[in-house]
Amino acid sequence: MLRNKVRVVLMMSALVAVAGCASTSDLDALRADIQQANDTANSAAAKADAASKEAAAASQTANEAKAGADEANSKIDRMFKKSMYK
Image 1 (cartoon, one colour):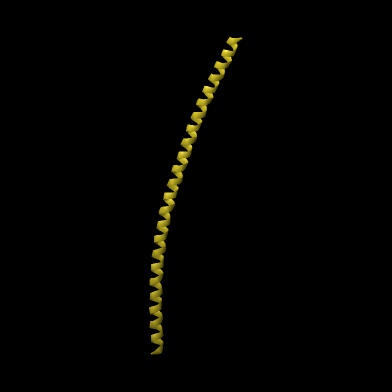
Image 2: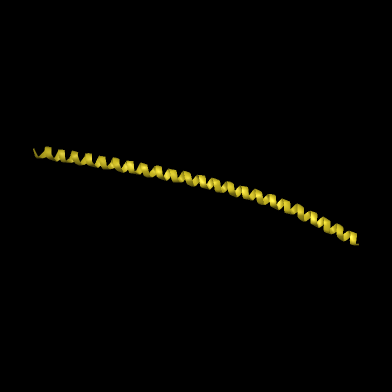
């Protein structure tokens, strides 16, 4: 009777040990997946930041071009009005 109890306890201990190892490896795999997701998110954030800076530079260039075009239009209007008065 005592022998059966010892066997049951040993089998339960072995089962717990195997289940514990599987859980640890599952947790390690999950941690690796989480780390990979974090790395991907950080990379995406860096690319988005770079794209935002590039867009800001393009917007500034466009604003400068618009200012130049507005100035040229203003000069042309003044020249046209001046020629109309002569």
